[in-house]
Length: 181
Length: 387
Image (tube, rainbow over all chains, first blue to last red; front, side):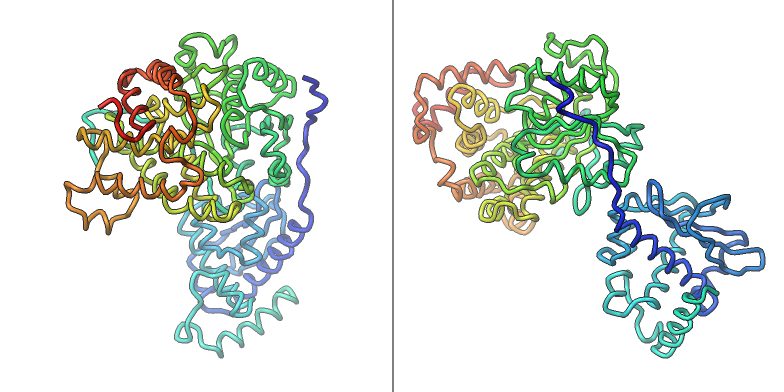
């Protein structure tokens, strides 16, 4: 057997998908920061977390990541896309780029992806589930109903989220996400 | 479902099945401390372009493919296994990924034995018993024509069967992208082997509840999806179901020696060159009827697996086994263009029957040569010569 006929194959990189996921994580990270100031349900979820709480959502093995934390004053902040020196309370990782692409192109909802074992969660599971609820609410605000229905487990009814609240908060969240405050 | 007084079952492989399942391989390998697999495939699989899909699925991961050998022939031979083991060591590989069906998986199991245990001769008598430690991680990716033995605890190398719990794959990855369209005859041949394995595993005297669960799922998948897979080869849903059935039937077979139909099918195939699965498809209804007549073997649960809970509960207890065999016969009869009704229609010389019976009885100690002859004679003329 001539082994030179069977060379080593180094893994390639999926540039387009990684860039797309990085952009989505950036937008969602900033939107979570905005939603925590605008929407009372998201605010309530964050109030249940202790001060100094930091969570990371990213893609294995090498990112991209999104970090969101709560400072000692209780303010929720988007902390960027690098893990850096932050001590993570909850580290949520999607097992591979393709799985992350399915989630961020809304081909698979976050809850379904969880059920399909596409996530690895390092931290308290109760906190992890609260983050999934926050992500669901943020997706409802960011996306038009036709797409958001694919991304969330159950789209909120009128009684749960009135159109006035939805459209008013959506405008505020978009503005704050774009301006970054 | 019956609970034996005592049983052991090695429940090992993890199943990852569905959309984008291939991309889970790097993560799963990392949990087994592996990053550099040797990939084995046969020319048939690589001809369908599945190799490229596999390589692409490993992008964006730390996994480097040590070598991609896609020329494994139709027989697992010790010469090739030794060469591949050398390639594995030269490239510093730490795991194996194998795609396809049949001999390519046996080859991978042989390589795994050589690279994991220093000085082991896989062909030495009782070699399976010498495998006392876990082997290197083995990932198996089935194709639609997988015949079930791939996920079992045995490997056939140079016509010798080696059996050990450690030979089971660690991970089975079933992805729709790897389900290339095959000829209908190929699909039926593989499915009949799977169906035979599953029915024989669930009818065995020492059948365990776990094995029964796997077998019944495999029987149901074949029954519900084979027609669709044959009508439209390459269709994702049915192909995935058949690949799942093959993987499950192999797990169900773990710990069992081959039954009478499987042994005879393989022996006749060796002697005549005819497809083993088709031969099993001819023999299976006769074998079940024979057991049914003698009131042993066929279990009521065959009907449950084939027809579902509604038909099972509607059928009187005494009629369940017979109804199960009837449905199976009708099902196999639906593929009459590929599966003849009797062995006579396959133009097998009569003198080959005796040879096949002797070979099958030698292969498994659970039945005698005369049992085999009785079944072959029934299937040859379908009139019960020997009765």
